[in-house]
Length: 151
Image (cartoon, rainbow, N blue to C red; front, top):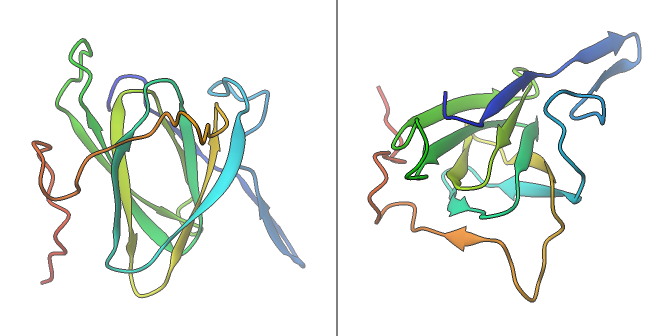
């Protein structure tokens, strides 16, 4: 696993009315600080990525549909520099993926429905000076291929 990345198995509590699922709590070992929470919708066949942050840590979980979340460690001083991690997650396989600054990440909906991710990140988005750095999903030096493989 990429240095600094953490996976939290999410708890779901079912009863006769349905179920609830916890995402991130202030008393979780992986909790750092609160910046903002936002939703990201991803249509089937679309890649949202690559991007990274220099300051912000992301805490992402998928609340609708299924997603493939892919991470790449581009940090030159990291013991896992160059490593790629791939996670398939959704409401039926609930995990939270903690992504530290400097780790490039992206995601894509898996299947035929829109997928929705929630990010509880450590810093609020600064519209005047965003901590958001983008890399083309297909034209880059990252050793990962987003092409859908059938068969």
